[in-house]
Image (cartoon, each protein chain N blue to C red):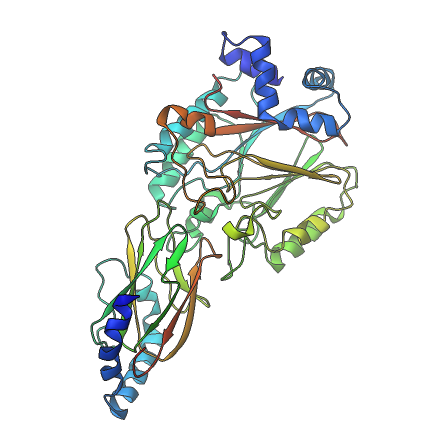
Length: 143
Length: 317
């Protein structure tokens, strides 16, 4: 959690770039939603997140261990990348509740990254162990 | 019949040892009692008496997790080979096998191929249902269906008849919902309703699926959301046996005409519900591992009686 609060002011600054960047972000997101989810599902450890996202380059890690996402609830600024890392000896598969995004099966030490551009709440779960759930809150202006 | 196998495998095992095994393995005796038979010896006698009438035996293997190589068992393919070697060494072969899922660990082609090669060495017909580990290929189950889906419906559910017993393989690892448990879904439930409609209530039913159909421990996802709906569709039958895997340990209960049973894994044990921070693989001393792994032999004794289910570990010589 300390990482997150440290990053909050930075993502806040990114959130204040002005209306044009927001429109741009929205268009990017739209195109991304229409075209790119299939590619996203291929994203693995070293894959770069969609380059056009108004990312501030920050990455926040969510640990998967003992069949739990930690931190379980996370608040980030738009453009922040969340990286899930599986520390269990069992594969997990991270997906948005309605499968808007979905990782591959993550074996031990595999990770999956996704950049959140649009403000709002995103609930996600493990497709293999659906009792594992977590939430990301994306807030314009920072956490 | 169950005595036969232990004696066969271990010449040093005396009768007392064999009976202890049966007591420890549990269900064969427990269920015989629930059917009104007094002891484990009576199971053997009942079995012998019924053999002439066409009684038969089938085997359940589960959770072979081919490809798993973590500390809890660095060689899951090896322990599957051991389990299959035990089956191949049986003097009287079971009629067929069922595999209650998690054939592979990561649904890769190689893992499926390795599993098929080892399991195929029995020469027995094998009926499969997928575990969640079998449907994590890119197509979320396409690989499994391409290999095992022949003659099945939907995401792989199927039924068949053997010696007057109706077997139903259900799939409860697909389209799982956030925050939920295992799931059968409307399409499969509708299929099940039709599948059993024409059967007489005296037909013994065996349902097998990966995740327990009854709620074992929801905190770890050990249960099926709509399992009770499936069970309500077979309520009118006099004998229903539910065989599951997923939790890598034996659990059982009897509820009315329904006997529930979960099998051991051939790969690695998992902790008892709530006795560890998570249901992840349980590391036991290497020399103890085979006591936690095993296969399940089901003796079909008599129509309208519970089936005798005997679990054997890989350590039972």
